Amino acid sequence: VLEIKDEIRYSVCDPLWAKVMLEYRKGEDDPIPYRAYESLADFVEPLPDSPNKPLKIAFVADWGTGTATARKVLASIAQHEPDVFIHLGDVYYSGTRQEMEDNFLKIVRESLPATTLVRALAGNHDLYSGGVGYYWLLDEIGQSASYFCLRNDHWQIMALGAPPTKED
Image (cartoon, rainbow, N blue to C red):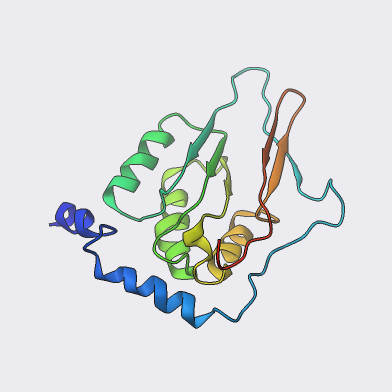
């Protein structure tokens, strides 16, 4: 039954897509709480570095669904014990705080080692509810803004973005 439910969930037959429009309309006059830098160094963070082992970074996108498949994907990633986990955006449906908690944060905390650095970029779904849930998530994972630079002596990973609008 769960597999059938997950198959319908997020498909074109899913009536809960109407929730996206409701969330969008509810906050359409509110500005997205974008965080700007004052100095270029404001959002540079240390990238884990160990001379004894290779750095492991996991990238996923459109993963934040909370489905059994999403849990399996993260379980597979967790087996590799990544140092860094970067989600490239889209927690479904509308990126509300509850969806961020249920479809992203709880699963990440249950699955990944506590030592894994978690970072998230914003996709369109993350901003449909005005970005409030997305920016709540950033606070929960200790990320200062919707863009960042991870750097060590050997690598620099830059996650860039422009100030979002609701039309994005």
